[in-house]
Length: 254
Image (cartoon, rainbow, N blue to C red; front, side, top):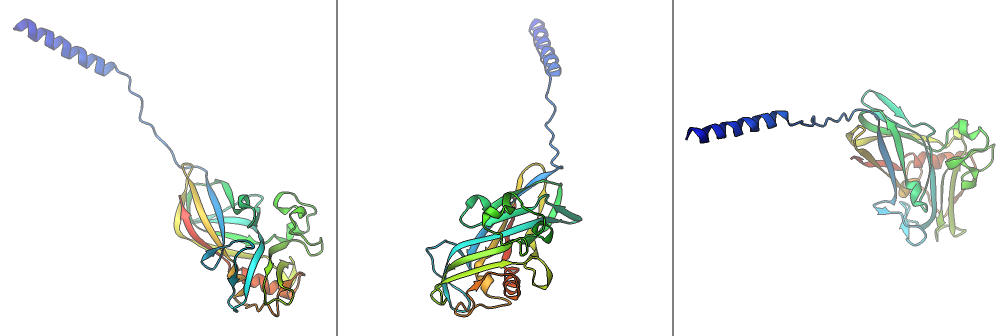
């Protein structure tokens, strides 16, 4: 009996030895703090419906029916609002084009770790870039969003058709970058809930642009009387006052 007990004790001791000598990997640790990224995604709508080009009739607040064949606008000088401070995107110029799906989203890279509560952006192109000579990328005049060096970029362009228009078409091109009739509009939008940017995970911010608001307030448009804006001036400035209200954030988070 003693012999069996000795064998059991040796086996037990060997078990302790092997257990004690087995190398264990240290627990994995992650540090989520650090620069992260945020994807800004745009959806163009007409009221509660997604904008469809060329094939759908819509009705503005005046009761005028219309179709849309082109909807472009610049978004620039994007900033994320932090609980303490802001993050500013470098070289922040984006051309949103309804007919070009790849233009409807862009990434903000190297966003510092922290909690963010909103976003600020300009609809249009700042004065400096309007007078800085030929540009490339989103600001390339070949994109069809530029008038002349004296009048600069078209900040927002909407084209389409309407039976109320004497010409059968509607064309609203808002441009002019200086003085009392400048058409850039900077807006600040709050997030539905604050987001935490960290190096693990990508936050998404969904921005909606409502075409109906272009014709609603503070200036309501009757296409029988106003169906074409194509130069800088008071009419373009009034249209810009309307599109200052067209954006909203509907979602922010992972």
